[in-house]
Image (tube, rainbow, N blue to C red; front, top):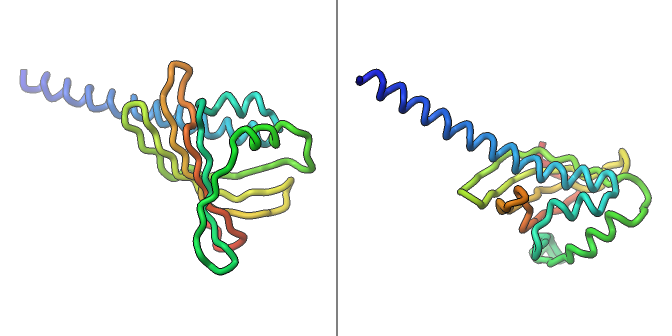
Length: 152
């Protein structure tokens, strides 16, 4: 009986770990789909990754060195992605951390942004996602932007 209890505990723990991994993969897929949409210039695909009411923030530096928080309009971003523009917007991310608690997920992803194959800038993207009936949707994006000291 003791062996059965130990085996049952191991199976349950493995099942929980597998469920978390599956959720993490789904979260990553939503974020990766957003960047696929950017590369393709597909505003419909992009919009499908966002929850209603999504918020965009960018943390940057003024010329005097002080830090500033800028709020960006998600609808303008979606329109810009879908409007024909020069070059492919290619944001290359590396997801380094995914945290999930029930229906809330957080993603940390250093990136390098290229216009076609020409480096433009780098920084870190932070995403907050919520689990909905339609899957994981991005509810918040914050980023930093710089030209050097890129995270590898």
